[in-house]
Image (cartoon, rainbow, N blue to C red; front, top):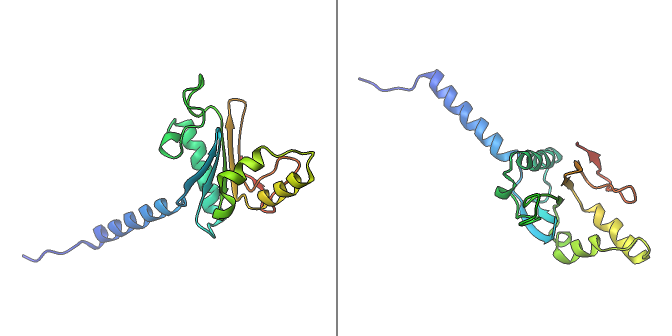
Length: 159
């Protein structure tokens, strides 16, 4: 008796492989490289497409709603009354030299009164590929960054 694969079964098998590879590749690999309390800098590969960045930001939102952020990022408000992720602020970078703890702290602690800090802030923001923010009062995600004072050239609000 000859054994053979049914063309339909072979097609369904190949389709399943293709779908699983698309699902796995839709979110870029990332690494948390710096943290300052509730703020994280994460690094994605260079040339990560905008569609994958959008998917990543949406995945942070979904994980927060499903209480599964701990599978993706370290706690930002560990042991807090509102939980380990009461406030989450994520900056996504594709250049390692901008995703450092020193630069993250400098940006967070910068002064609007200092010309040097303002210039640094403008340059730092140019390198933010995407941003996710959550607090009990608001939630937003976007490509790039915009705080009303400085804006990334690639800024686009997602939600």
